[in-house]
Length: 285
Image 1 (cartoon, one colour):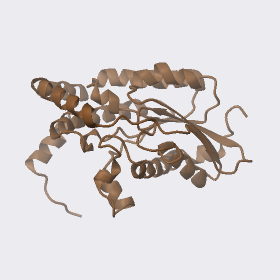
Image 2 (image 1 turned 30 degrees about the vertical axis):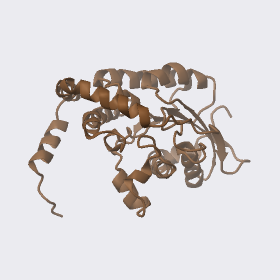
Image 3 (image 1 turned 45 degrees about the vertical axis):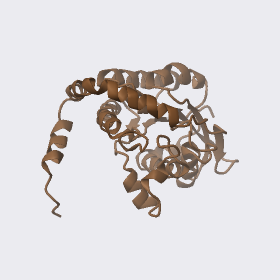
Image 4 (image 1 turned 135 degrees about the vertical axis):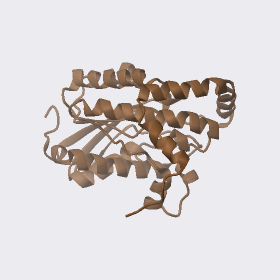
């Protein structure tokens, strides 16, 4: 099937993404430096009107036959995993994921969320991973990248931090599967100015590429490298909605987005790990 030819700008974007991530990062940084004063003022103004949302209530739950052996899932990450924008985790990402997995795998899902707004990959490793060091876990699901993007994390630093997180989980839980979710689509946040979307959006793709490389080089580590397309999500899952409906405050997901994201993540996990997760005996039992 033929398609429309690429425009000159499209071709530049494609060529740019083929460049080494480190070179892309420093090239983008060079373009960003003169704009830092403007970006700072825009970010400061944004903070004054974006509300401070609480984390969702109920950070643990269960779905499926309560009499069956559980599959234990721990969700780690930043504000999106903490459920900001939803009243409860049952309505946010983790609860949706657990419900979908319970149906698809036909087994009980015991889930727990350990996530904090504003946390980077390094903070998750240092502050949250130790909290599950002695717990039985069958699957880790990790949602990170937004805050590391805001802090303009370099590809090398991000790669080291993601690898350190994986190593910390390996140290405490052996070869338990670790699934990294897609990096949040900062380039689509309605609350951000066009300049912020452009500057941070390019870094999102760089960090995603680095995550993909790290996942590919580590056994039982998975990364859903498909870029989040909110337009596509709305079209496929909720045609009567708009992209603005995907956000609770212009930055954090709405309940609609959490539901769609949880469904998509469940399908990814079942497609890649379904056989293992259907048959694995719950850790520690």
